Picture 1: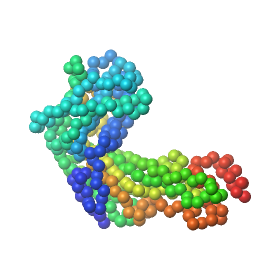
Picture 2: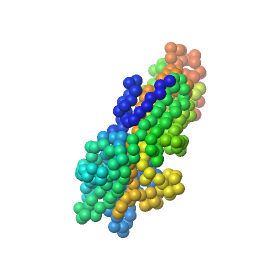
Picture 3: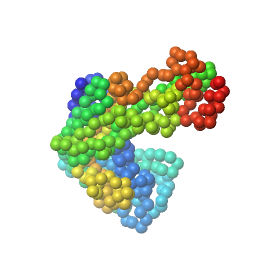
Picture 4: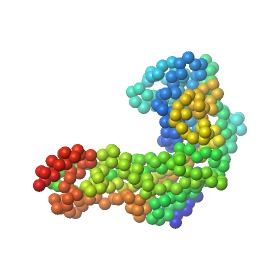
Length: 362
């Protein structure tokens, strides 16, 4: 059994791949995915007509990353802001423990023709048990601000037991909240090797990551949190997503299988401010502006914590036991003699077309 202890994302076992705690993708996964998704449309935080509040802020001080990010929305009198417009804002952070003050750089991100994002970033690692003040300042001096304290460092254990589809994970330390807990399966569909009649086109393999939410599964225990990654249960969800996206056929046909290439989990060991009303992240409650906010003279939420994540390649025995399979059907066979290969190797083909195909094959 491989039992490994981790104190941050750079201290992984030699057999494991290096973690990615500092990468950009951690921000939308843990913040935009957990917070703005709870409040509906990403741009819904803008339209507060007639208010003097200057900004809405989403982000957190991450002790598990080398670069800090925050997303800022100007509070506007229009429902759909000008996608080409910039933002009248400067962002500053002050380490109230050491007195260090810095200005953050600006970056505009265009999501599509209508939605743009205003991000600010600064290359530093938030220090455990230090208190920070974040200020977003408009040119007229109007300021939205928030103060947070980064919690103490945490460790986590993950047990990769050969052949077991249940993977216990324990996060230890003073962890008031464990939020944004996600397990992502990086899998690929398995097309058949051959199809009949000869020359029938076969679509290539497609990798489609599927993320499973574990927020309601992790349980607080003495000294931290504990949860179990259930690969067999999650396989059913992965299979459902692949089926809805027309990447696999039904089990009786030529391409029903999915193979697992890599797994990843990510979470934020968060400070005590991550406490929604009633202790539940209820979208209907959090959609009300100001319900879940700690920003002075502003809307939104800015917290603190330690981002933790790890990716690894499960061994073949474990993946097979969970339901994944890598063997191509119609391999080394004469498809005309194998009923499962008679159907066109194209998932989601209409049943009437399948009937015509079967009649033609006769």
